[in-house]
Image 1 (cartoon, one colour):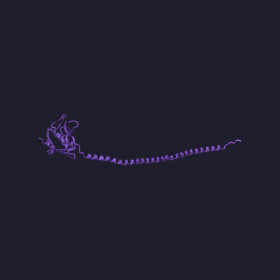
Image 2: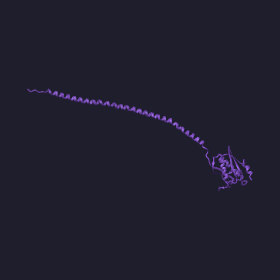
Image 3: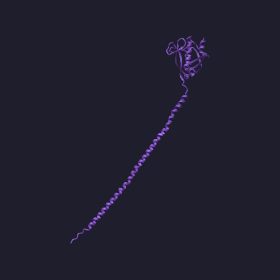
Image 4: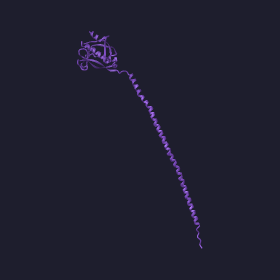
Length: 243
């Protein structure tokens, strides 16, 4: 009789299965460890995400603070700039008040023109008119200054020719020997004190001399009337006593 030996095979199969299961469990354990470790890193990402809003909030807060502080600073400093115009205005006003009147380089004089000449000033006489002219002067003040009146009259006395250039104008004072002693301006009247002797070429020249002197003095004094004295008496009396 033959006997069949089957018992050992199941043992071998059971051992092989046990080894396979052990390997499988080992591999699962390793994979499970990796899987459990990976979630631990995600909280750091969430933490960074949660940290970023706080950082942005703090940055926006600082930006808003700087923005809110800048208008207040500009507002506080801007009024100081408004004080500069008043300072400049007061400085310019004080400077202009301290500056003296500018000296005049020209004076107004009057010559005698022929009757009927346009732009002339009529005066009692023989029909002639007075013609305004500007002459250069030196060391004289502005209109209203006695020095300008004196300079203008001296220009009349310095012209020693009857005919004034080639303009057709005449100087009735060309023969007179007169000197300005004093000029006084009070209100609307200028008073001129002359010394010397007025010389007239004839009856028509008398009013011409008086008109030249009076109108020249008025124009430079800025007044309405003039009183001309020769050696202490009115020019009219001095002309009537001429020899």
